[in-house]
Amino acid sequence: MKREKVLKINKVGKSYGNETVFRNVSLEVKKGEIISIIGRSGVGKSTFLKCLNRLEEIDSGEILLNGKNIIDYPVTELRRRIGFVFQDYNLFENLTVLENLTIGLTQIQKIEKEKSIKMATNILKEIDLLEKKDKYPEELSGGQKQRVAIARTILMKPDIILLDEPTSALDEEMKESVLNLISQLGKEDMTLIIVSHEISFIQKISDKVYKLNKNGLELEKPKKGEKIC
Image (tube, rainbow, N blue to C red; front, side, top):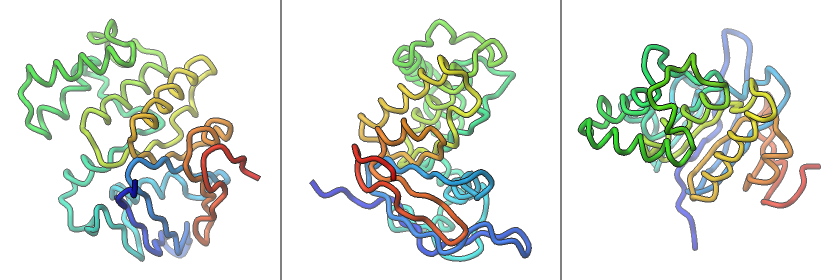
């Protein structure tokens, strides 16, 4: 079955003053694909992800979501369609886990509170954190926080989920729980773009792996199951 193209990145460039971060970055992403981005530290991988939902603005080129330039979307709608999971979680510290999950549903999607709570409760069951629903982020482990952050993004039903180094600050046990959740998302045909240094993991789940450098993206791994040379 032919998959529809959800994202097209055409010759995108980003600079800070006179310093070029990257240029001529082009990429096409189809629905249900898992794309991973690797590259040396400081090359601009996180900046690249942020450009995709306008947390950073590009200096050249264009980014099309479902055939429409991202600058033509209202920012709130764009960030609902392209969800971002940050490496430092970005949970609201003054809200409980349940409140962190429902706030976007009630305030952005305008879903009634009762239904939002039911949706959040169901996903907490799926990620095995229902018993933490009334806890605050400071009472959670790093792995638990990251799973909540991913669940919050899933609930918004985005077209694409961006994950920025989702396991970088976790120990091995916490890391495993987060990697398992990401792997499950892949099986559910979600479209993911991942920045990660977990090479062995992304080799297993990615449809394509690209290396980012100043001059663009280079394909490292064309299909699942093949090793990165």
